[in-house]
Image 1 (cartoon, rainbow, N blue to C red):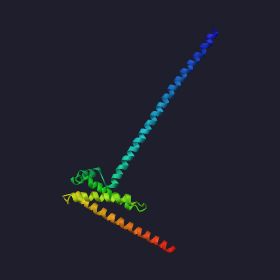
Image 2 (image 1 turned 180 degrees about the vertical axis):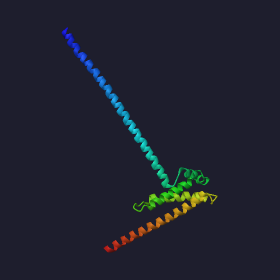
Image 3 (image 1 turned 180 degrees about the horizontal axis):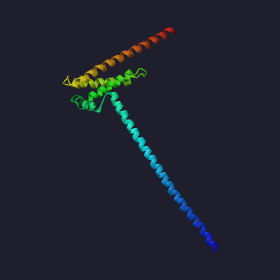
Image 4 (image 1 turned 90 degrees about the horizontal axis):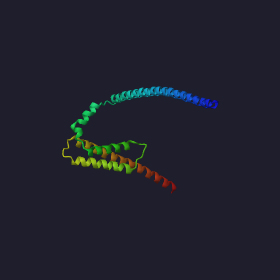
Length: 180
């Protein structure tokens, strides 16, 4: 019998240890749960503050630009704005891209980038302008202005390239004469 009691003691001790461990686990879960809830609450507050700061910055940006959604909506809903065709918008976009690349002095863009931009813009704008029957429409006026500006930019870039080539040719001639 003594051996039976000895066997029961470790079993009871193990059972008590399991109960204590289970209680400690429950307490830890409660503490972690409340800590997790507090952390989620703080994250939610920080997200709300960030959202408010973003909205304030957006409002300041609108004020700085002088544009409001109402003004843009009026412009987009106007019949003149809607009468501009996709071909005109594409030509104007190519002209703007050509001008953007032309204004960057520190980067030398090659002919295989600039030539298609200029030719494509001139083609689209010219075809749209010559094809329009009403030359007084907003679409025709925009095409004409963009066509003239793009043509001037193409000629100006060609003149700049010619001047650069002439300078290089003179430098080569100078080097050639120095060796003769």
